[in-house]
Length: 195
Image (cartoon, rainbow, N blue to C red):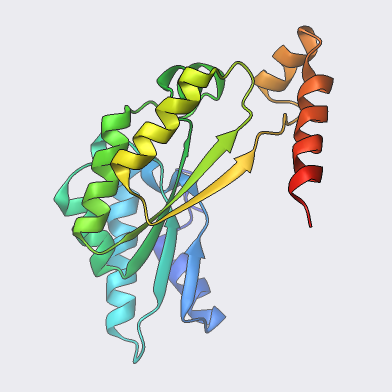
């Protein structure tokens, strides 16, 4: 591991090559935290694929930040053979997404631009959405539907919100004596949709 907390690109490429896989999911949202590292890393993926008879196809978890909303970033993802990006919208409500869930701060327009740029460079967009988020109103939910319709991602996966112990929201729900009700509702929904 390097001094900045990121693995070196060489060590990651060595590990990727040792797997012998044709498709790999880069399961880390921290890729977009250090843009210099990300640029070097994508360049390493491009160079590594040039040496291979069959290119490795990548799926990458990406957080939406204004700093990546440009052609150059998505062009480089495409060149690195990133065929799918996974992104957690969680909610179309800015208030829910930022003040309740504490997700990275971006607007719904930023999210739609992210999806548009990915599609422009033939990259699929896989979106994660939470339902049953505490304090979410019907108006908040309708904002989620609206942004998904506008963004038109390739895939949408809905998750039922579950309060995780130790998170700020879990602590707040405990303080307000709502955690058990939220958990019970989530389990009831799970029971209703399970085969």
